[in-house]
Image (tube, rainbow, N blue to C red; front, side):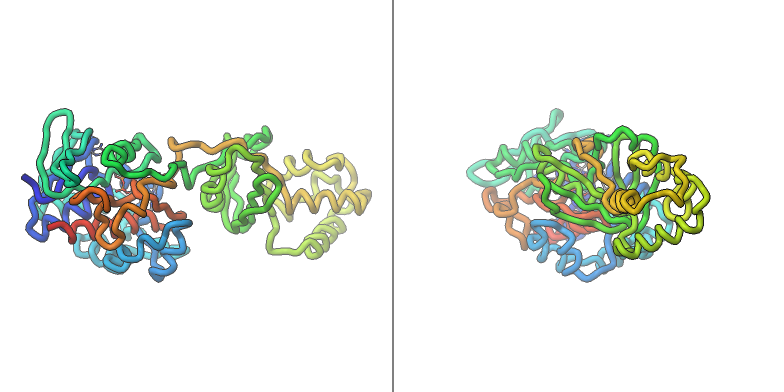
Length: 407
Ligand SMILES: Cc1cc2nc3c(=O)[nH]c(=O)nc-3n(C[C@H](O)[C@H](O)[C@H](O)COP(=O)(O)OP(=O)(O)OC[C@H]3O[C@@H](n4cnc5c(N)ncnc54)[C@H](O)[C@@H]3O)c2cc1C
């Protein structure tokens, strides 16, 4: 008989298991994979952006939709406490651009090893390669869980099996099925922080090109819905990079509508300023052909694309370019249009939007309002954030709350 059974050995599950065991509870951790923290290992491109060095209010603002649910968890175990925790377990951290916190060693493995040490030193019983297949509930109370091999009894059970994003890491959506089995409502799930596919064939020629300090504006059925400023990346299928990932949540929710991206390559300049800039470049290169006049303004790879998209012949001499043609060019530079055809799906998404309905979870304890002794933590719950370390902070904080809660 366990005091707590934890399903899922990821960020939330390991945190919960370790803290409960530290309080003297008898804890069993069941993990589907042959190893713990498989997803953690690939976070932050292997460097693990484990939290963000900002105010808690700011963390909450980075959760579109449902951030308020996390108030209690984040104040119970803040970003500062998380960094202190990792420091105690041998992982020093550093702050980078945008407040992103990483291990000083730049190694996600160090984060996973610290968590493993934390749970092992506190006596958590770990069973790998055992997926929870069924929850045992009697008269509204959790009684345990079944795997293919065994049946386990427990007074409390935490479902921390993650969402449906990047299923190769183990979090393949099992939690939604298990939560539904116990009567919970699942808010429609969709991939978020996901690269986007576009229709324009020329995109393939730009594969690998990174643009900094640009804006991307998403339009849905002709309406501008959101604009992001920062860095983006062209890929063989479309676009990715921080500002695209941030926009992607809205895309996944509106795939049945006409979706366009407008890229402003020079957002720091007004149209008038950009026109002046263009005229300066054109007088500098007045005796050159159009194709040789944009080198000061654009990255090399983009020049042939912009030239092809414009109606100006590439061999036209710059001093013969008309005002109308310049206007057309200005539009291309400030509203380079891409037609979104889809997302890369759960397979390539960083997080899952949607999940277990927060209306059915007590925000201060994370216990189910429907089943006594059943808890939820991490990405499985209907909370998801933008990039910056917020998703992991939420998972760690929620895990901490459950670990300190169970009796
Ligand atoms: C490529 C990538 C990069 C990312 N980078 C960052 C980043 O730098 N910063 C950030 O904040 N967030 C990042 N994220 C998001 C972050 O990793 C997740 O939001 C976070 O790991 C969620 O934690 P969790 O504990 O809820 O789930 P997970 O970490 O996914 O853990 C769930 C665990 O449950 C196990 N499991 C699944 N089903 C069962 C079952 N039936 N029985 C038993 N065990 C089961 C899984 O194998 C897994 O080990 C990234 C995600 C991806 C995919």
